[in-house]
Length: 138
View 1 (cartoon, helix red, strand yellow):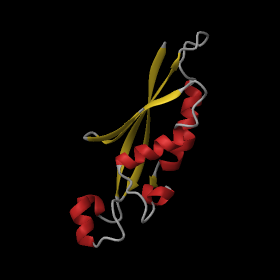
View 2 (tube, rainbow, N blue to C red; view 1 turned 90 degrees about the vertical axis):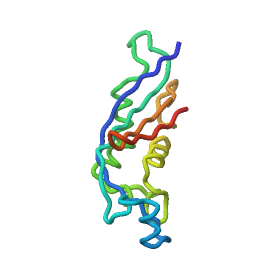
View 3 (cartoon, rainbow, N blue to C red; view 1 turned 45 degrees about the vertical axis):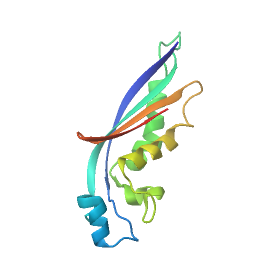
View 4 (cartoon, rainbow, N blue to C red; view 1 turned 60 degrees about the vertical axis):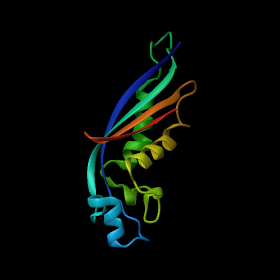
């Protein structure tokens, strides 16, 4: 029987929505205040859900210390207190817009292939604030 475990993580980061090939008016029309230089920040909440069999010895789906270390190294440390447009290669000028949607896809790329054997990444939920979140589901 498979069980899904969910763990929450937090980090703070800033970002800017802006396409360098668009003029100021187009950036403003498409992104509104999110195009204001130099950017703005959020206190993000990331929910990581993993699925696997319960280990009969430990009673756990996954070793939480191992999961925490993985998320800390590959997601929280690279993003926390950073400007996403600078800290993440994919979000640099001319790259992807660091929206919640694109950020959750980036996080998926950081975690999916690094989980312990027998553990599957099932869902990611990234809350930018109380009113906006993006989810990836397997």
